[in-house]
Amino acid sequence: QVRLVQSGAEVKKPGASVKVSCKTSGFTFTDFYMHWVRQTPGEGLQWMGIINPNGGSTTYAQKFQGRVTMTRDPSTRTVYMELSSLRPEDTGVYFCARVSIVGEEPFDFWGQGTLVTVSS
Amino acid sequence: EIQMTQSPSSLSASVGDRVTISCRASESVSTWLAWYQQKPGKAPNLLIYVASTLQSGVPSRFSGGGSGTSFTLTISDLQPEDFATYYCQQAQTFPYTFGQGTKLEVK
Image (cartoon, rainbow over all chains, first blue to last red; front, side, top):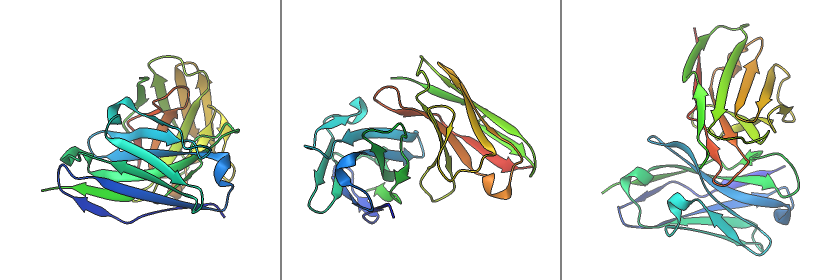
């Protein structure tokens, strides 16, 4: 079955970086774009960006440009999201989610979420 | 970016009721609109995509409609498991954007 399993909760200090992983299984890795979406108390659900599993090209939301980096490792079917220069308002739950390259469905499967807490 | 506005922000209803949630986009998204249900501590769950297509496995009491800038999610014959928060999301243009959510509570 389709599974997106994310890494565990993180606690970081302001100014630090965090790297969240999302290990996939149960589907053809190269058939689905992988997106990152976060949910914060202040701003709700926010789309952060997308990575193409074929070649690794990315598109980031302007809000996160310069602070976010998305990568993938096809050998382990894992995608990563690194967010730098963390501030307290980055505290929230970070999700990976897949979108079919050829279908019309948006985020049909999601990871379980990773809580990132930014506090001094 | 396209702004998505849901109404109402919260809604009280009883089991067996029919409820409708609205979502308005700041510019046309054609039918590139999805609806999700989220329960506390869980990831959102896809209900409807391209405005009116029911995701596999989602009960038929959920239905969606609309196009352009105005959309609705209707839940007929509310069941206890339907009390949750609902979000719309446009998939027309990056950045994808979500509504602020509608919390459906037990009356």
